[in-house]
Length: 188
Image 1 (spheres, helix red, strand yellow):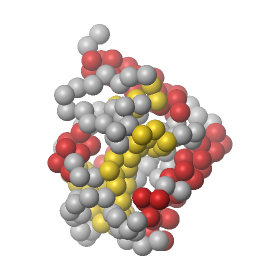
Image 2 (cartoon, rainbow, N blue to C red):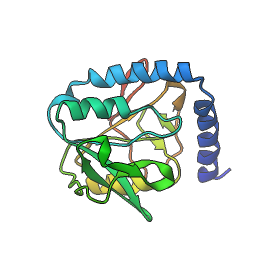
Image 3 (cartoon, rainbow, N blue to C red):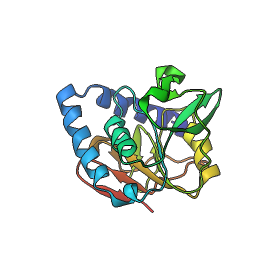
Image 4 (cartoon, helix red, strand yellow):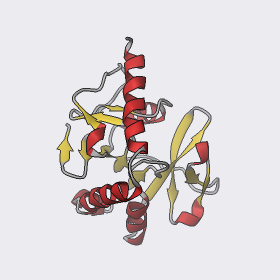
């Protein structure tokens, strides 16, 4: 089986498991991960946070967004246009609208965020302990991250999303750390 086919099969398997979580089980895991993230001191130094806006069965980022905004931490969220993704500053949920695949995105009036340092929370379906990930197949973060290499990369994942090894391709870039319900994995 070819690398891409293996990645697709693993993504399907993990997403099926994630999509099958009972609501109360998911909510409990989301709370644990949120608590760990909210206790992570680098989030509160004032540097910008580039945050994906969760949808479906992903780790629920909305409580984190609310806390960052409440503490006046600069927050940027992604917006997809065609095959490209960029981040835009947001100051409240009222600046969001349904975008790519119905995922909330910053509205057209939001200012583009120039990434010069900061922290970026990267979504994914599958991760390994070295920080390599399998996303959702669109390649948006695979294209965005290399052009913004001065950012600390962070991922939030449920324990079953961590596997022994993710099959890598030449463009894959590992995240620096992964926060789960039980641990913080330092990858680089």
